[in-house]
Structures are given as C-alpha cells and as structure tokens.
Amino acid sequence: MDPISVVIVEDDERFRAAFATSVAEAPDMRLAGTAGDLAPGLRLLREQRPDVLLVDLGLPNGSGVELIRYANDHLPNTDVMVVSVFGDEPHVMASLEAGATGYLLKDAQAADVTEQIRSLRAGGSPISPVIARQLLLRLTPQAAPVVDEALLSPQERQVLTLSAKGFNFEEIARMLEVSRHTVMTYVKRSYRKLQVHSKTEAIYEARKLGLVRD
Image (cartoon, rainbow, N blue to C red; front, side, top):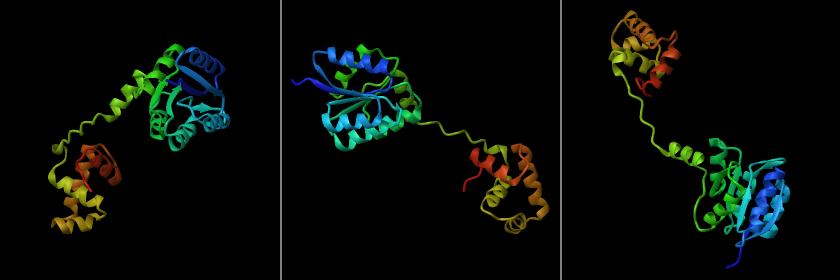
C-alpha cells in the first residue's frame, strides 16, 4: 500500500516540527509538506492533494476553516483533522460543518497524532474526549421547562395573551365583557406574581415560562 501522504498547516513552530517529525518517522506515512499560514497551506493542498490535512485553526492571516472548506470542496479523497487549542463549541462546530472529520486538542502528544491519522484514514473520526462530550451534550434533547400554570389565573393569562397580540386594555375589556378596572386588576396581579413593572416585561416573563403563547 502507498504511504499516507500528510500536509501539516500549523503556525506554531514547535508543534509543526513535532508533528512533522512524527509523520516523517512513521513507516506508513509520507510528509508531503508543511506550512505556517493560510496562503502557503492552500498552495500545498493544490499541489500535493494529500490523503490527510492536519490543520490548526488560528493562523496568522486567516482561519484554518478556509483550508478545511477548500479540501472538502475540491479534494474529495483528503481527510481533514484539526489540531487546535480551541475547544469551544463555535470553533468545533465551524470546523465540522466545513468538513473536518477529526478534532484533537493540542494536549495530544505528537506520537498520538500519527495513530489518530491512521484511524482517520481507516474511516474513523478521532475526537478528543472533551470535544466528544460537548457534541453529545449538544445532541441530547433538553427537557422542556415545567410550566406552573397555577402561577397566573386563567383570566390573568388571557389578558397577557391578548396584550401580547397587540390589544390595548380598553379593547381587552370589551372582548372579555368586563370593566377596564377589572382588566387593570388582572394586570397588576400579573405584575406582582411575575415580579415585573411593565407590560413588556410581563409578556416577556410569561412567554419564557410558557404561560403565554403567540
């Protein structure tokens, strides 16, 4: 079998050297080139069309996401693995949505990276445990908030619902066939129970609690 060709785009010289040495010493891999920034990295991808792109996200003149997107759009046989210090959800999701199939944090040892490259080429998706946990939490359905409908009386909920639809208190009184004074009593009780001081705040809090629906 042909060795796995790898391009490394990493701006930190220490990491770039460590990854390059590890790949070059692996008997089943070939180091196709290294780059420290976006433009030379893009040239390498076009010229070498590697089996694997090992890429950092925070590059001096751009984002590694651009390289991921290029590989995904133009190099269907190239697998992409991110190795980054960024473990937050926006960076992770941007990388995966652009086409990365592996994501490792930079606490991984250089020797481990070559093993993960093998896993990637075998069809796996190497992901650091911290990142995997984030993804699982994102995909886990969140429980719906418990609605305490007893917090507001049916009349108070009805007044807030009509207010949310844009009716004023005079119109609501006519619709409910009660006096404006009665409507204002419902409103004031709602304010007190929701601990707010205006109609806008009351509607917002009631919506948040599931007591008012548009």
